[in-house]
Image 1 (cartoon, one colour):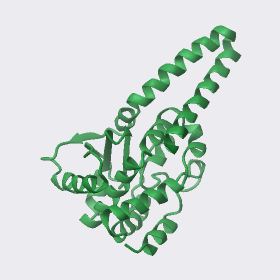
Image 2 (cartoon, helix red, strand yellow; image 1 turned 135 degrees about the vertical axis):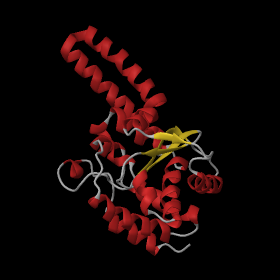
Image 3 (cartoon, rainbow, N blue to C red; image 1 turned 120 degrees about the vertical axis):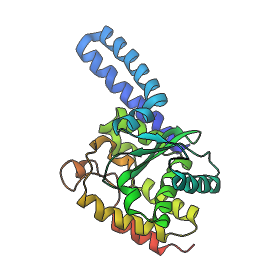
Image 4 (cartoon, helix red, strand yellow; image 1 turned 135 degrees about the horizontal axis):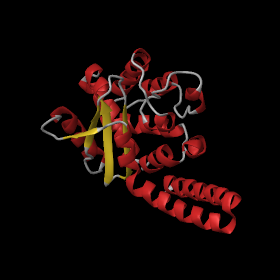
Amino acid sequence: MGNLIKTGFLLVVLTCLLILIGGAVGGRQGMAIAFVMALVMNMGSYWFSDRIVLGMYGARAVTEAEAPQLYRIVRQLAAEAGIPVPPIYIIQDDSPNAFATGRNPQHAAVAVTEGILRIMNEEELRGVLAHELSHVKNRDTLIMTIAATIAGMLIQMAISRSREYQADASGAQLCHRASGLAEALQKLDIAKRQVPMDAAPATAHLFIVNPLTSGGLASLFSTHPPIEERIARLRAMRL
């Protein structure tokens, strides 16, 4: 419920900003046009924001026959979490990363890069996928995806770093162990520096680790807590 309220607030704020801009530019007529535009944008972002984000990264849907290991892991974790099995997408990028998107658990998707599939062993990959499915179960994905597609300027206000800590903890519980995700995060932190990803700053918060390099825009859009702290919390868990 908390994330639904935040999503509604985010859309209301965006609508008000557009109406104010419309009024400043075109008076009452400008406000009316801006209001209609805001309604169309809000409806479009709710229904299609996941497709927009997946399209931005050229994500390709794969079948269970094409990616049997991925589907086996996701199927097991989804059953443990009590959510539907989401479709899986692969992004043709050597930088290792992953994200989940969708407006609710019934309309969600998980995307992983080719790079993450190359460097992860099964336990680490299970930890990463458990983290992403936790976002789906916790209903984080709607606000995350809307913020990425229409409201990048409001990300810092709408999305809390605690969301990543919560998904880490929930993911470890889904796996019944924290070591896989902890080791995956450590490996991802090193690998992303060696093979940086050409990611849009407004979508950085979607990924399991921040794809942006340190400094500049990366600091401005720093929606991820420090990797070291995430790993320390995972290693301190007793499952």
